Length: 335
Image (tube, rainbow, N blue to C red; front, side):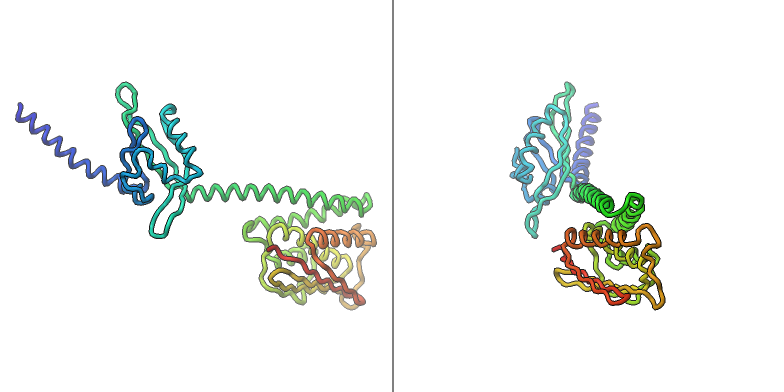
C-alpha cells in the first residue's frame, strides 16, 4: 500500500510538473497582459506579455511598480480603483498603458479587470487580473461622440438657418405668399441635407449641389458646366446650396433656360460664375407664380445678399445685358 501510495504521489507530482509548463504556455500565448498580486494588492508576478509591452521587467512591476506604466493622467484614479477593489470584490477600469518598443513610446487604451481567489472562509488569498487592448474600441467611441457633437451642432445651425429663412420671408413677402416661399426654401434645405448625410465626413461635391438645384427647377442641361473636383464642408455647403437655389429659382421664374456654370478654386478662395439667359423669342414668366413679380424678385435679391455677404463673406458682381445675366461669386474657403 505504501508503494502504491508512493507511486500515486509520484505520478501526481510528475503530472503536475507536466501541466504547469502547459498552463504557462497558454497564459503567455493569449492576447492579454496577465498578472497576479498578493491579498494586500502588491503585484508578485506579471506575464511575459506585460514585460514585452511595457518594457517593465519582473522586478519593476512588483509591488506598485506597475503603476509607472500607466499614463500619468490615469495613474491616480487607477490607484484608487485598485484600493477600492478589496471592498468591492473586483477591479474594472479603463486606462492607458505605455507601450515601449524600438519605435519609442506610445500610450494605448486597455481594459484592466481582476478578481480574487478566496479560501474556504471567503478571504482573498491572491488576485488574478488581465489587461486587454481596447484602443480600437476607444477610438470608435471617441468618433461616435464626435459625430453626435457634430450632429447636435448641425441641428442648431439648421434651426438657425430655418429661423433666418422664416424671418426674411415674413419681412419680404405678403401674407398669402409666405407659406409658398417658406416651403420652397425648406425643400431646398432638405435637398442639401440629403447630400450632406450621404458622406457626412467627406463633405459635399460642388457639382452635385449645382446639378441638384438645376434639376429641382426643371432647368435644362447647362451649355457649359466645368470646374475642378471640389468638396465643401457641411456648413459651407448648406449656405452655398441655398444661394444656388435662389439663382436657379430666379432663372426659372425669369424664363432663362440657357444656363452655364463654371468655377475655379485657389488656395484660399472659390469663384463661381453663373450665366443665364433666355432663348430667342422666349417670354419671361416673372408673374406666373406667387413667387414671381417684383416682390418675389426683391425677396430673392435680399436673401442672396444676406447669405452671400453675411453668411459666406463673399463678394458678388452682377452684370445684365439685354436678356442675359452674369453673376460672379468669390468666397473664401475654410482654412
